Image (cartoon, rainbow, N blue to C red):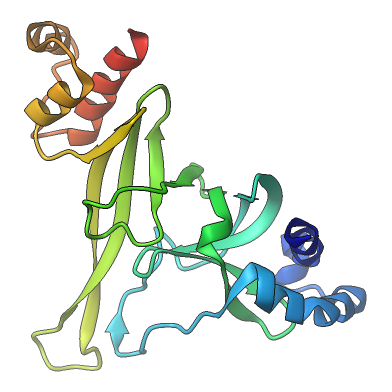
Length: 233
């Protein structure tokens, strides 16, 4: 039943051209009929923007809604306007009647693909209890296979030192993970990653000489290389 209601509500959000300008009385009327269902089943409520005294924005890459794709409870919906708030680890869509951001309940999200110039895929990881910033469990899927390379994008705020119109500013942090059947770790050293994947150190060293990969200078490239070796086994 929840999936049926979700399908109805997202149907009223499409296509994005309607959401961002064109008036459609039928769309508005049907959306109004289903707002209670949207609030109860689909949405975590309205999203409140950070204070205007905060410099920057809390979103991944852009503060504009992008035409995207989202999978909820196993059902995939295309051409949905989405924003990913990496400050609160929340996925947002757009309410066309009141022109407000609304939250999609994180416990219903399986994955989504932000329709940027280069699309970026995010998945929800259910367990990563040792990681303090797990939040709702949304990670970028950087490399997919038997083992995955994941990135946790997050933003924090800090006080502005200089006196001005802004009291705080956003800054971004990335943490890197390897996920394989039965486990996930946050990677802070190449030794840790090699041991977690059960790779032969000498073989890794020999294979990395060709592409001249170094963990310190290119962590993501090096982790993608290690995971590719693991996935070929």
